[in-house]
Image 1 (cartoon, rainbow over the protein chains, first blue to last red):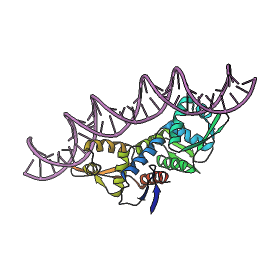
Image 2: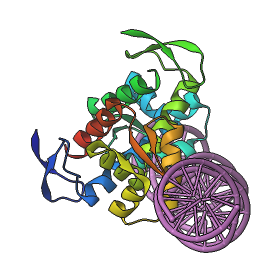
Image 3: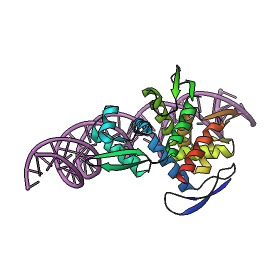
Length: 115
Length: 115
DNA sequence: TCAATATATGAACAATCATTCATATATTAA
DNA sequence: TTAATATATGAATGATTGTTCATATATTGA
């Protein structure tokens, strides 16, 4: 099982997902960075909220009972990691998950903690 | 798709993995805690190393070029989250992944960052 | 029992991070 | 253009966290 891939740093590599080959230092670092994004309950809640519906910033803030500023800061992190996308409609900006892959990762994690 | 589960806090719940139902606050918190563990490159490296071989603490320290103390501290985190198990052989303690599930989670993350 | 070796752990420190507060930017309606 | 509204963002702050250092615990062989 070998795959040609594009890392976040833009160059191409080959990754073995089989036993016996430790992925490159940089790839492991990127992987940790990705999990770090999921490692905050506010961001997790935002992602789950967006799985249900596309939502505006103030909608998320209201749902999670947090300030608009806090949500905006976290949405920035999610945006920078390409986990969410957004569209503008007048004054309002609607956020949604950038792809189903994001939810798959959450599902996998849920499976683990629920044994 | 409904599953009866045991949370880390020891009581039974029901979780919907379908659109339209936000998991309980506490479950989302536990999920974030799990990802937090994966969100450090030292721990990620340890997990990948253990996927290849069962290893002793000093072996991991040597492989990652880090102090025994730093590795021990991180192994404690992995132990507390039940991601690794260990056995003693004389003075040496060998660590290994607690199950294949752990590596599945890593594989899923790798898939995401490699597009 | 004592010395040597492997591992664990508490305290301290620096670095990172989530939230808050104040304010800036962008859009719309008047 | 001005007021109102939605969102973004820089600075400050308190909390969390990874590593180091010193030391404790556990095992083995002498």
